Length: 598
Image (tube, rainbow, N blue to C red; front, side):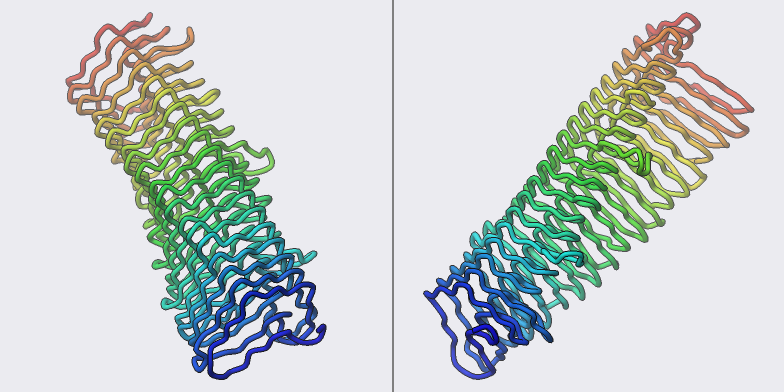
């Protein structure tokens, strides 16, 4: 039947039940699409049930006008559709290779229609443009649910020289009453799309609700968002939870090996939680596991997520994020980053790094927070920031709270963290954050390297932050801080022990310039820090204080114990220039050794 649909449903009453049938090698060039089934049904229909069906090599060809599903196309308005135990094998169409329901299951699921796909199999289905397996358009209170071990295997978009999205699924969902849900051990395997969303592409707007639970994405790829690509606008919300796993997913030329998310407007939100895993995901761009761009969006939360062996070329082995105009990202709750890395690209921006995270912030209300025992283990960067690279311009807050950095490494500056803060914003490291055996191989700042510029920027390190056994190939074995013009900078209750540097400041290197101010106080201690070369000074701390009104204050029971350097200042060495000033009040220097002074 080459010129029409095998089955056509029109508006009418009654209940449609099609079951226990097989359709093989059927094609259609009808103007409406859907080689086997085309339907336009409304609330007069009691419902549609498709069960125990097999569609093999069903093709919708050369259609014009509406939308195209290789095997099935449905438009529903106020109708319930149940698709159960159905197989689509090697089906193809212009949009929606296996099934496209416009109105219900682009299904155009409109006017509070609902559609459930229960234990459905899409195998080697393809589309020219969008949705190799399924294309859905959901609006006006429609709901689409994919559940119970539904599988998408080797589905793809195949149009030569054409823009493509969603190798397995492409979804457009609009308005706050509409919902799209994938759950119940649904899986995507070896799905591909040239442009965006190797497995799934979702465009959500107007408060749409999108939930993805207990889903696996394996070996899926595209230029951007190898597993999942999503654009969330005008209050759309995406919730990824309950062990959603991205494994071996890849972004081939853009960003986001596992997930790429673009959010705009304040009420658009993204949540990733519940022991979800990103494993061995890669990108030649930024964000081996996840890439997030947030413009104004206030709520982006990553909670109890595992990133392991993820890799990026340009920045953010696990996560890369751009936060602008009030965008906010929080990472918390035992989230772990293990052996993630940035490999570098000599033709790209050489400043990008961050073995685990690359974060770029702009605008006075943008925030980036890491709280609640987040762990970074053996992450590395060929450039800066073995674990984290932060670049903030006019940001409001960057906070690292109770995080753990262990054996993180970079070639250049900041074995644990590299941070550049300018034109306003507060950078806070607090609440027992630890840096253990972190290393900068040829740069400064074994654990931390930070530059804080302009009068409205600040750094605060407090409440038991510890640098233990960190190493630098240049200055600042534990940490390197440059305060340039900034006035409100404080370090208190910090612990630095057994750190080493090849040059100045085995524990801490400080530069206070251009009328900046920095205070170190409240029992901050340096213990067993030592130089690595015969030309280094400042075993515990080296401070360069330069320019008029630049001021460094050391007070309130600071302690330097068993530190040494090969030249001067076993405990502390000062270089004071251009009318800079240093105050040393109530500090203890004990058993510190150098050729010239304690």
